[in-house]
Image (cartoon, rainbow, N blue to C red; front, side):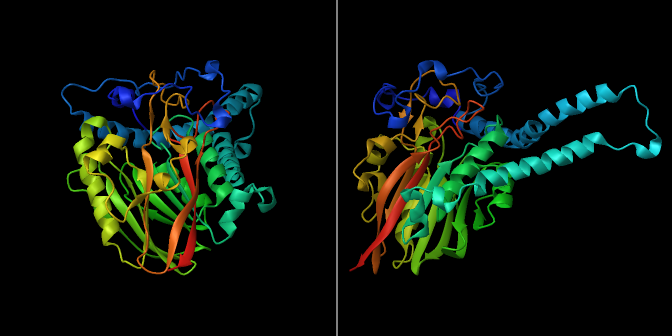
Length: 394
């Protein structure tokens, strides 16, 4: 989640006309479809002069993580409370015997919890294989599929509906590897309770964090570790998993690099560390990194470009315009940012194994581009769905 104060620090080069290069399915979206979201009370508040932008942003995000759980409970209980009130008003003239008195609040909330859980289960498991497209069916083949997504778990609004939307996408594609950023305890618990067919690896237990999900029937988990960024002011780190896919050793990494333009130097320090770990991974492993890098193109150029042996997957695929911008306020109005800002914050890097079959990207698609019934998108970021295939052995 990017706040308005963070987004105001964007250069002219990073802004573009909303009409340029929009994904085809969104070209006809009416400008009048944007609505005010009056429930937001803190997102656009300015940062106190006494606090640095980086530390203030981190404090705000930590507070948001704590608020989200309460908001999720509120979302589930609103309808129940309304029905309880009507029931109480209807029955107020009746005085039942003491032994016949029950606790409607407890009973209704229990029923609501069961219904909510069933709704989430349905969102994830609801699609049959026969309904899947050719791209989705590749998850059953020798293709390696990966989803990378900053799910904006810090946003306390419409948590239940957005969780349903997220589960619907994750269930639809059943990716072999899922890399998530901006998880919070409530979203982590929801996913873990529903997605029993995945191995869950957690980047932290505090505030907001990253996660790696590995599909159990296709990816064999071996071990994991967490690399701390020594100078982060936002609690960021690098989560690493070693695994095997159809006999091919993999090293999978995710991170949420330092946010805000003002934190550019720290972000680049973290990026160097990511690249170092990618290069030093076992040479027989294919290394895949995916995450919310918060990178601007000029920052990569400042480092002299990508290191030898490490490739940007989007560039490898020929820079497809339809999957360029993963953070696009010309379309995504979850944050109600007045300027049209379009950036490729979310990126995938690949380091091929020195021996054996070489993993090659085959396609990249942005997901989560449809608005939910609550008039929100699942996240303020689009998700990335990427398909890979192992080539012939050298």
